[in-house]
Image (cartoon, rainbow, N blue to C red; front, side, top):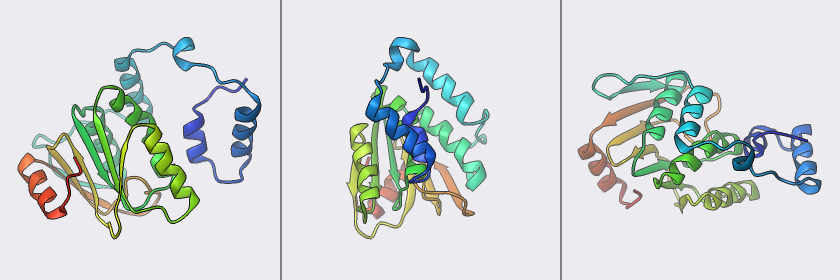
Amino acid sequence: MLLGNFEYLRAQAPHGSFVRKLLDRFEEHGSALDVDTYLPLTESEWGDGLRHVLSAPFTLPHNGAGTFTESTFYPAFLNDLIGAKESITIVSPFKTWGGTGRWVNLLRLVLARGVRVCIVTLPPEDQNGNGIVDRLHELDVTVVLRENTHEKIAIVDGNILWHGSLNILSHNRAHESMLRIEDPTAVQQFLMNFRADVT
């Protein structure tokens, strides 16, 4: 028996690694168990669990705005995603299995709550990229493939704007900066400049 999050493990394990081969073998010869049968949790319990597993408790500044590095961005952005009520838009030109996989469980959680999720990214250049797009579609994420996209942005509930240099679906080790603005007027102004209905 193998108990684990296959999606997360596959997203983190390098291609051709022992872990990938082990997952392939179990998926080919084993039988999947329904996690809801053996671990029945409510939506709020899943959300509370993700808060404890994925990051330390985080409190935003009083005015909700600020600048963030690659290390401080993740807990702040996670906090915004968990609190989303209507929509999440992520503009990330580049995507990797590891970078995208870190958000899969959280996206599944908010989608189950009825939150709309849209991802704008470059068209895939290889089969690996096609697989990521297919996986996002399986989650019922709207994926917009756009040539020449280079912006790194996220919008939450039409009210919170993240903008900077960090590719949310592919970031690994590089030093980056992100600006968070909590202002629906700024979001609308940005969308007008972005020339797209992506929310």
